[in-house]
Length: 102
Image (cartoon, rainbow, N blue to C red):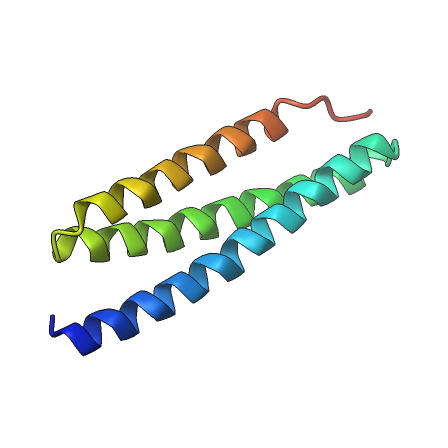
């Protein structure tokens, strides 16, 4: 990959990463808000489904960025992206373990 294409692709993938991480954070906060507000289980379950979708999307986006870095031997950048993935997975697991009201 020539340097110009590399930087263009990196910029596009980083912008997508920001958008996806923002959607994930919004979905996570929505679940917390519903749980703290004692929303009905259907509302909480809907918010959890949105969180699941956001989680899948953010991991796909980060995976694309990580793969691009691996293809051009940018291993340190790849490690940083993988660490971000692990952090998001921990946040997700923590959120999914919260009790849902009946």
